[in-house]
Length: 316
Length: 98
Ligand SMILES: [Fe+2]
Ligand SMILES: [Fe+2]
Image 1: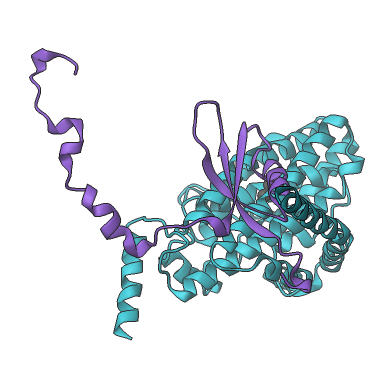
Image 2: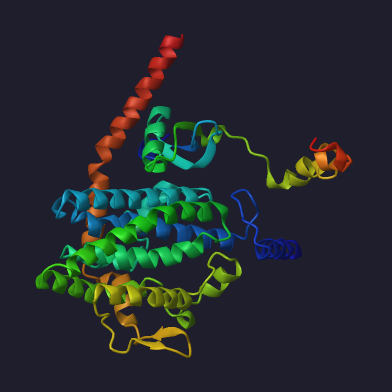
């Protein structure tokens, strides 16, 4: 027991000194479990996150928009793969992780359970949803687990185009007709609050955060990240000439931050527990894609086996 | 591999040469049923923005790594061998760059 304690103390000192933990290093079991849960949820979010946007690929208003959206969605698939790889370095089994997602047992970011009825939503997702994801991911570039941190560096490099293409879509709409401007505003109205919820519950309702901060898995609290995001985003909304749907949003000179209304946490927990508009649709789509890819996976296996036999024969 | 487990393709470690003249560097891993598919998958996942001009893939299981516990015996012997570095030797400034 004393030995176990001293290992944990040594681990804490190692992390406190800003060292990165690598796959073969000793780590507390809880650290490993926490990371597998967090990284796999992050991976699932990237994968499910493709769905609301994929909805618009075939209907993008121009070829320029279409190639951009296609490239963005493809990036998100890549992000999912980087993250599953990082989870595997901790001993997680990828197939088991994917199965948990398909069975509806794993969590993913609740934002992706909202629908994308208009083209402006593609703009709002890039600007706000990717924007919020970037705030979180920039922080995670400094997370204590090496493979996770390195995956985040890759991801962050790719993310900034996502946000810019989204903002550009909205900029184009607000400079267009009255109807287009209205479409942009309507989209902001729908995505603003869910985007703020992406940072998770307030600090006093986030019981696991303290340990994650201590282990330097997380480097900033949910509320800190949310505040940063709001402060950065409000001027961008002003530039667009759009109104953020919060009558209480106001610059607080003293704090040097924006004050805002209370977030509707009931909605947040409802969507997480499966009552969002698209939870079922998203899970059905994932399961359908997985089932329809079965023949490809089988064909690749058969081909690989035949090639191996072939090369064995020619070597003999 | 068992029948129901056949989707679980092998893991391959991916190394990429980013430019001519540089060595290959580890970038991550990929799943694939064979080496050729591993290269194709690595291309799609790790070089979407011209990050490379050459890819190596190695089955993860084929890699033998030093254990973190061996860190001391493996690497500390080099720490006190200062005479392996040029700054260990005193050369007067008048000699110029040497
Ligand atoms: Fe992403
Ligand atoms: Fe993104």
